[in-house]
Image (cartoon, rainbow, N blue to C red; front, side, top):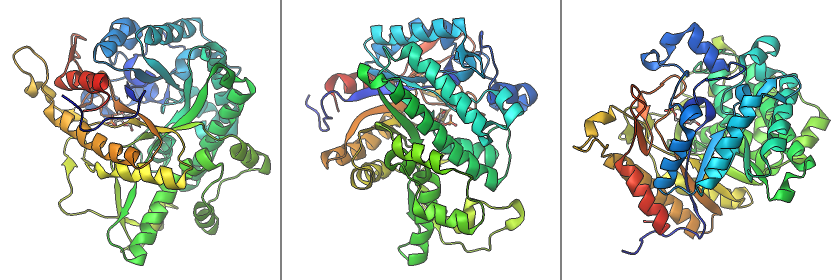
Length: 465
Ligand code: BG6
């Protein structure tokens, strides 16, 4: 059967996870903010399931990676945990077992015919650095991150050709400093803005280090993974359009512009300056951001953001918040994923592709996460015990169709990674919503390929569907 949708030659058919969500905490020399949060507030996690074991990748990576090969993946992203690789957080001296583990994971990934993509930060700041320095509020922590990155580049860049500095840095800003869904659940707009700046700086400084170490000479490339949530206005009125432009600027372009263009959006600087909450920066730092742009971009896309002009006066009681400039718009009849509470809108894949093509130099990019989290999937098991997740296949195909249209029209997209290969632990939803091509039985750690796992094997084999 021939494809209706064929993707460019060499297209990445892969899937992504992160260290803290699949490895378990075995043998880590340090605790992350999530390890600590679970210790002090286990009830904040669905069914009180914490990060201790997750899907046991620390112990089962060989079998797990063989399963990824079996479902036809040709690339795989995970993250190196700062709290596992680094023994001395000040100097960046590595931990022996951490080095052994990540060496094995990288070698095994390559042995199974997959391109490893290694990310350096997936929300998992060492909690000590929060307690001592205020975490991402501190420029000293920026330097410590660069030390960690340097250690990782020196150890692994002979085999890892694709690196990313951060996963969804905007979620750190939102979760930790605005909307209280990540520990330490602070609400402080001014700090949020400084953290946004500091993480942009940390990414640029890590890229600078990558270039100084001449990792490109080994064919290495470095990027960042951003969660893009395209903003759509309620109407085409000037006011609604302005509200959506500001939402895009604050949540999307605040990382996308510095990463790709080396500069913060003018509108962002203008609004934050007017409100008296602009970050503290220096000429030298801004120069580093300007000079150290990414080679490629990863885009995580799950849901759009619908907005309208502010209808109610902004409540100043919490201090500065992005919502000073727009209200959320609850669009009637939108399609929802009821388990995750996220709107399903595959058309955004095309809009993102075209935006990158037209406004971001058509930089090489890939979808680094996209997927559908579903609760209670056991009820879709057939007699042989495998989950018949037709809804997921449909979701992924719809998204891929819109991506395909963007590629046909010239967007420079080189791959598609779903979230996630094997059902994994999540930040406070723990194992509530499952995303994998492979199901995990949490009690026995048995892993079983779902119908979508067989589907992706075919898609990968045919380079389309
Ligand atoms: C992305 C993250 O935001 O979405 C992942 O990079 C996360 O770490 C995924 O697991 C799905 O979100 P959640 O909260 O349903 O697990």
